[in-house]
Image (spheres, rainbow, N blue to C red):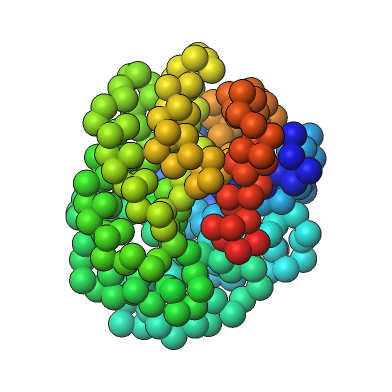
Length: 278
């Protein structure tokens, strides 16, 4: 295991029903508070030394709250927040949020937008074009069906750092690899794009997934992005619908154990530190 181990993707929240409409049937375990003490306990057990906290609500209030938690914590190294990128007020909001402690990037829940081509809207792209001015990265939260337009979107911003969340959510529960694998590899040809191996078990069959189910998807990500642009993430506490934090960390370590020590250290720390400027 690397001296440093960075979890590049987790959430924190104080649960209120009206704030998390995406927690549907079967997600009852998520309908409670997940706070710093909980995060510290699971990361300590798994040997994780640093994290990136990612937005779970589309509010600037949450971004400020995550930044406040990060400012008081040595564990949280960075925050990926939310800003109204499609708004005419995007620039002053970004300037304000970028100056908060440990804010490293922004994200919008693209895969929940009714319009599957939302990312190609001119107002949204105008906001995204501002991110590099404030040295902010952009996390891509998409389903595999969004990959064609994601490639077009990324090509509009060749100088912007992008990070693909949850390997673009392929249909692991069905064992389907194509056309996700080919489209992901095409996206990975853009050297300004990184990828998180996170959110995989919740795209598999929650109660009966195996390492063998996941291995072809790990292999495809590593083939596309190489360890140089691949990073470990947990998606905790959403992860707990299908696995414990420790189980997921051990699974990833086992899957990449045949790689060189340098490559493993890259996946578990170096890539996230580079991509997010930690």
